[in-house]
Image (cartoon, rainbow, N blue to C red; front, side, top):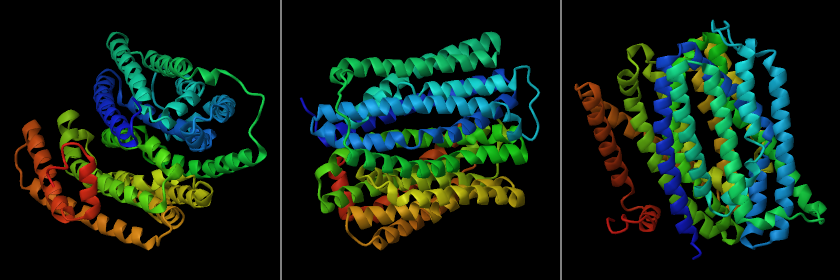
Length: 508
């Protein structure tokens, strides 16, 4: 039976979110074992090298997003010839990317000492550790093009399930070998092998379910189609650099200015923040295939109607999540690791603010990418990357850790946030973008109100430990949701959204 867009969205969103919760739990178990069996310097190395490899991933140049966008129409129209042509091109491009990532990583490995202010005192070869990270990253590109057909065909849950299975195997093996050997190199080798197995598993599934992709066509894409595709890839390449810098420069700058130990401490907070964000993002991105399907033939009015509902939904979810993080991160770290691993609350506010910005931006980002507006934002995103480096570096030199983390949200607000909203409203909905920015500012003020009221209430709670943590969590969620319900109870878009969600429509 063929599922509707709403059904596919719900299945993909739920499986993505549930799987991400499971992945988060595995991540905490793995991190706890990592901290218990290995010195703090290894934690800093994990955070630093992960970010360096994320920077190297700009070699992917946005090929994935451009190809996924190009596949929406032929897959929906069951144009197998066009789909095969695009997938063959995608395959060649990603093999080239894998070679580029490996080559750049090999060259960079000879200069890896530059990224730390003091080389850690560990028995393993620093360059060999980095090369294992490089090989893990490069190998992930060899078969990843096969995932695109599942994402476009609204079957993200298949990708999610396969990844979850191999991550479980990876975590069990890594913890086991850490317990018996305390060997960091074996820990990394297991990660590489499971990454390869994950991609091979998806490849075999796609080969079986989409046998027509194994055929090759002598007919190539016409010049006009190639021109549009490469234009989008070029635009995404520039945008990609900005996104990579925004997401990765923080740990590198902290390492250079303050050392690997602080990177390790901050990475614990990043782990938790990214875990919460990952659960929500996995749920939201589960509907991206359906949005792409919608944007193939829907009119501006229908698109804006869906957008308004998604905007309220993402704002609501991220407000609840971010206010909880703001109130509970330090209590959680204190219970988990101890007071010596705590950082100032002002730094936490800025780190959480960055996640709020990216989360509330999801609706305009997803509509912009599924509508194919890549060229329009390329130089704005490039500017954002440059500003991020400048703000974070200068801020770090003058204000320390707070100045470093403040660079990311400020640069995003000045560039990508404005660009995404402007082009989606102007070109996609044919309406005035000022309407979006007014709503964005009002939502942010509402977010600050939720932060202030809930923080005041939580600070009145004197209970400590796990019971205190749970009480603070419940108080925060109750206060935030009460405020949001009072504000949105009569909002037309909220009521329309409520009627789409199972189990809620009878409540309002």
